[in-house]
Image 1 (cartoon, rainbow, N blue to C red):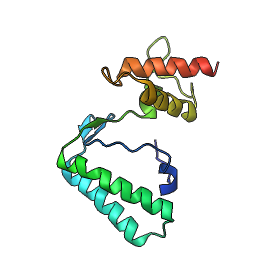
Image 2: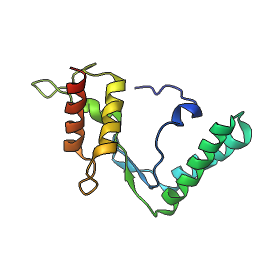
Image 3: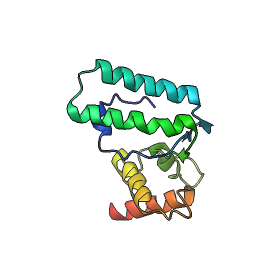
Image 4: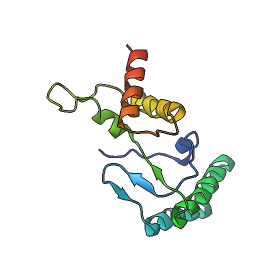
Length: 140
């Protein structure tokens, strides 16, 4: 799936996490220190060279600072994606069902589980599935 181009403004409404080393679910690999430093340098370049609004610059600076715990290894985080939500929707043979929910509904599932999960359990496949069922009921 090809990612669509997004401006910094598109990310402004997304919550920033004070966490580190992002677990990329599709590959089960952790982003390493070098990759995180490259991301921080890219933000540095963006802030120095792009024509950003005041709000965009503030968001970029915030993201830049949030990368430090990732680089230092002081925090961890797992990332769940809309692809993970889609993977929960299968037919009787266990095959993925295409276009069963919209990307907006999948994002709604992610926001719901982020807001409502039990921190002592965390977000896992069962929690994600309950979130999916809740959103599907709301849209039924």
